[in-house]
Image 1 (cartoon, rainbow, N blue to C red):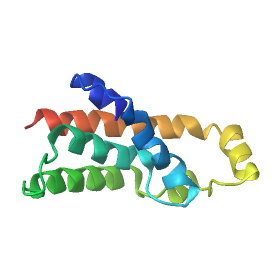
Image 2 (image 1 turned 45 degrees about the vertical axis):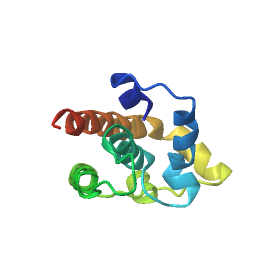
Image 3 (image 1 turned 120 degrees about the vertical axis):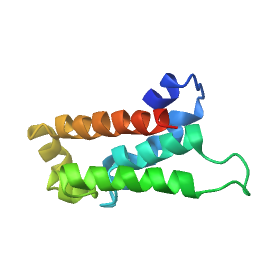
Image 4 (image 1 turned 180 degrees about the horizontal axis):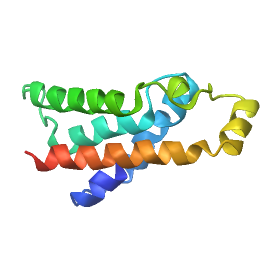
Length: 123
C-alpha cells in the first residue's frame, strides 16, 4: 500500500497501520497472503468509491484480476500453502528465517505492487 500511495502522492500515517494485520497470512491465521490483500486495498485506496452509492463493480473486477494473476503465478493465495509452513509459533518463525522465506515474500510484494500500479494506470 505504501508504494502505491507514494506513486500517487497519497500521504497518510494510517497506511502502515491499516496494512499491519495483513502480514504473515492475515495475522498468522493461515489466511490470504498480505501482498495480495494489500494490493487489493491499494487499488481501492486510489480508485475505490468515495461514497456508499458509487459503483463497486470496477474495483471488484480489478480485485479479481489480482487474485487470478496471483494464483496463476504462485498456485495458491493462502500463506501456509505458499510458504509450506504455518506461521504463529517460535518454531515456525525460526524456520521462516532459516529457509530465507522473506525473499519469497518480497517477490509476492513486488509482483502485487507492480500489478496494482499497472491496473490503476489502465484507468
